[in-house]
Amino acid sequence: MTPALPALVAASVGMKAILQTSYGDPEQVLAPGELDMPVPGDDNVLIRVRATSVNTPDCIATLGVPYALRLAVGLSGPASAVRGSDVSGVVEAVGARVLDFAPGDEVFGSVWTGGYTRGAQGTFCEYTLVPASQLARKPAHLSFEEAAGAVMSGVTALQAIRDVAGVRAGTRVLINGASGGLGTFSVQIAKALGAVVTGVCSTRNVDLVRSLGADHVIDYTVEDYTKGDERYDVIFDNVMNHPAAASAAVLAPGGLFLPNSIGTNRWVGPIPTLLFAGLFKPKQWRFVEYRPTRQNLESLAALLESGAVRVVIDRTYPLEQAGAAVAHMMSRRARGQIVLQVGEPA
Picture 1: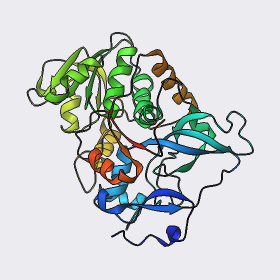
Picture 2 (picture 1 turned 30 degrees about the horizontal axis):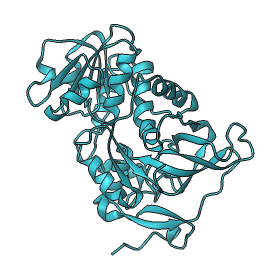
Picture 3 (picture 1 turned 90 degrees about the vertical axis):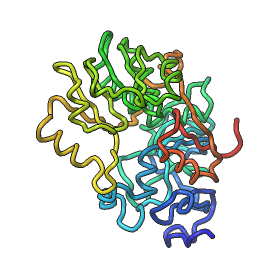
Picture 4 (picture 1 turned 180 degrees about the vertical axis):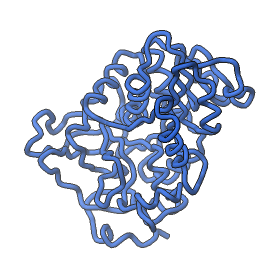
């Protein structure tokens, strides 16, 4: 039985959406419902969603874990009822000040503005509003599913590898969690910039990571990279299954450690790591702030169009199975992206 909907959405009708009613098991708390179709403001674009994808923020907001983050997300349930931030689709309407998109354009981008405030847009729905500054034209050869799967993971990887770490030819890069959504992009982008890449993954994903261009692949079920003799200029840790200090200990002199995971502590998540880094490791540790700007989206699109980077999709679910898709993401066994298809496939 579908739980009662929050008052702010209970009377709304107009488009299909997946609505979250409380924290908990995604297959229990993410339920089909209806909302009014949004109306674009002056700087927004109304998108008919064709595909979206599942990312870590969706898992955080669904479970409400780490618990400390409920102070920002909402104590009894998330302030916004609709999950999802990545989007690919077709422009339905544009705001008065939007001059570079028109109805019918195929686009991809993000509604992410850094939080879960009340009324924030989501993408687990048929239509959504996107700031025009966070949209770009979809590469013609990509499916809507591939384009949606590229946004948060692809842009974050691009920022981490190119901008924060400054990777260039010959940089020795280790990517922990190389077979996940963020990891698959990170391996390819680092290789495109000329790095010597080591990917860390499980046995079943070794061939995948090698196929993405990794020069070396470490099977973590056999070898612990924090105990090896190799030293790295950059470690991009998307798993945080080792103490951060242990990973940072295998950095080369002047190397950078980029922690990028909520970790495994259900109460405080990455907060101790962030505080420790801020106080004691400000030069050695760096953090990535996701910025889905048009410039970043267009840079990613250029890599996708060139063939230097491809989108790895583990599984595609229909919108109605969003709960199962989020549960799959939470299993931490996905190879690449998990995508939701909205409407009929192209």
